Each structure stands twice: as C-alpha cells, then as structure tokens.
Image (cartoon, rainbow, N blue to C red; front, top):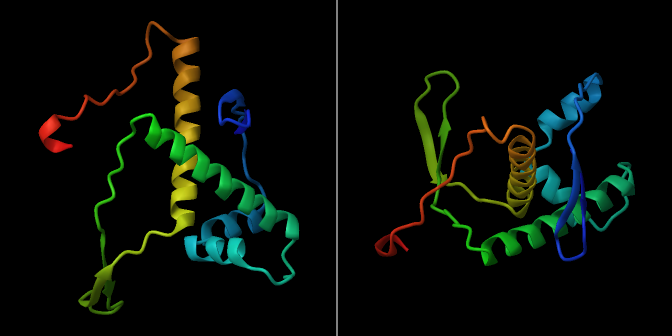
Length: 147
C-alpha cells in the first residue's frame, strides 16, 4: 500500500496494488524480522552491512507511527493496553518452564499503527466503491463507568 500524507498527518491519497512477493529472501526477512530486530536496527548508530536506506526508512516509519498514534488518541481512540502474560514452554513435554510479562516495544506499536492505517484506508475505499453493500464495524461509545 502506498500512502501520501501532509505534514499534519492528513491522508491525501492511498493506493492498494495487488502484489505477490516472489523473492524467497524477502519472504524470509519479513517472517524473521522480529520487533526486537527492528528495534535494534532503528536504534543502531554504527554502520552495518545492511543498507543505511533501510534503517533510515524504519526510523521515518517509526516517527510517522508515533505521530499517527498521537493524532488517533487525540481524536478519541481507546488505548487498550492491558498487560500480557508470556509463557516459556518446554519443547518436549509442553510443560510451562517460566512465566513473565510480555514487553511491548516501540516497534510493536509502529507495526500496529501501519496495520491500522492500512485497514482504515481499505475500509474507506470499500465504503466509497460499494456504499450500498459495505459492512463496517463501528464500536459503541464506551460507558462512562468504564472510562
């Protein structure tokens, strides 16, 4: 998806092309690129074999995600940040070995914001092109007791 934005984070135009990833290397790097790896690449200050362009792109995307998140929250979006529990499981017995809290990284939020941007853009396109038969989910206003 290609998205064009103004400086004040207003979506000007989106384009959702049909695409198929044919490169095994790209598929592998997408699947194995964890949040910790992305975070490490964003935070790095040393030169690496990886192109500086991809690191710069990740940093720009992260800055954009922060602005999108800030704007979304200022517009009244709910933040449902409940703690998540993570288990370490024995591979042979499937017994739990350890329990801890899942640490949400800044890069998790970056991916979340980009997914939300894509979902919103597609929903708007559906409503525009199929207004009489589009079905979009709308959450009710939260009860005051819950806020």
